[in-house]
Length: 298
Length: 325
Ligand SMILES: Nc1ncnc2c1ncn2[C@@H]1O[C@H](COP(=O)(O)OP(=O)(O)OP(=O)(O)O)[C@@H](O)[C@H]1O
Ligand SMILES: [Mg+2]
Image 1 (cartoon, chains in turn purple, brown):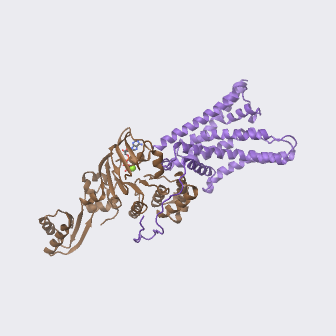
Image 2: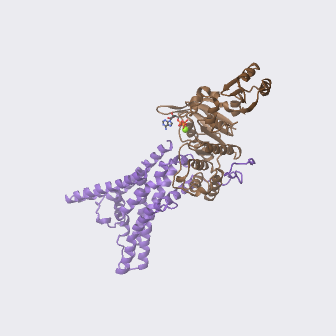
């Protein structure tokens, strides 16, 4: 290294010369964690403008409303049980989760596509797999926060109010575990749909459309089949809505009642719903990998 | 030591052959990669980074094969793409810190390196503002900073002067020179303007249609084409004639005479001729400006301003954003 002694033009100050970096160079795991953290912050608009924070935080507050109502209710009536039982919470609040998924999935994936940031990642040690894993983890964690926070607030409230009877510890823990599966599936689906377009608005619309479509089809079919007294088929039609898949699994595994007064067909519906979750999660993941493989070489 | 080497490197897209059995070797220092639009410059860089797979042939970066050692290569190189690549809602600092972490730097180190690197590329207070509001010149600096932040051994700079005004071009070129000379980082820089790379490169590679036209040290380029520009107050034609008699190769460009430098004796000949004819010498300039003429055939395509065929005075000015003397 040689120091430059020639005068530089005004505005360019070279106080110290270039120093080489001889510190640690960590592996891809570090990059994955850093990208996850960066994306999770992005999902809640942290470090971004005020406008970017509005939507995620409004939705988080809405998710917390049932918790507040439940605690107040339990305190006043001195009766056990939140207004929405723990295992039914996610499915009952699916609209809010769907809106969060729709508005925030494109926030995680669209800018890198639209502003062509991907070559900067893939010209580094980061691989397509690392990128997809980090994004899916971040979105899953964001959805988990939306469920774990109200579930835990409600449960702590129940313990503090301590109305007569046994606390719903088992059902609380089961719903905490199931929300992980639920979040992972939703994150894969939401991100996969959002990654198909570099335009954020279009991504939001596409995820919402997916939610409305599956919900409407399943609802209409259920109503029609129900009115024809085909109760078993009506129950199966409910499972067209991916948001009810996890609910059906929790009914199967915990024996709790279904959300929203749904009734899933007995017998095979639980395992079938579980398979459905695995299939949808895998499908979302595969779409993401293929999408980014293609983007990496563009 | 070689920085990179390709052997019969070929890349065929469905409709075009972007690289055609290209074999080049690059040694440490600043190397310019020159070619017209579509010559295959970006394709070569993407193959070297492992972003694209070659159809045939092999390539090595820092002695590592791109086909098998891609991950290792990407740890030691920096890349500045030709296109925009900055998310507008992040500040330069946040973005460069993030990219440093993506290269494996721990968080505190990433912060320090980002601050240092942004200062080296000439971004100061503005680095805390969102990139979306930056000028093209500032964006190019951020793009350069993210390529340097992890202290790579080689950087690939794809058209770093693209979209810059003459002042911005000069600043960028000076920075590139510093990266090679002062930072000790080898540089492969592309441009479709020979004139501007000539000023900062140690070595030039010219490709056209994916084929190698020429690869040689900058001295060899200028060596063969060294000229001296002579301007006199009087009519220059008698001087041209006189120099011709003395065995010099002279061409006129308006009022100016370009004399090919054979050696020190050429300067003596000019001095003697001017004295003999009792003329007043206005200027005698040594120029390495005829580099375009080395490729007269391809120069017209290479120089996007399309002025290669005119007097070299204008060509050079247009190509390098200012006359280099
Ligand atoms: N992904 C692709 N698919 C098909 N053709 C491509 C692709 N990328 C590049 N090409 C073609 O390959 C050729 C070389 O392109 P390349 O981008 O390497 O040129 P370049 O020298 O970088 O040009 P420029 O100065 O315009 O950046 C061009 O004809 C281009 O159209
Ligand atoms: Mg290019």
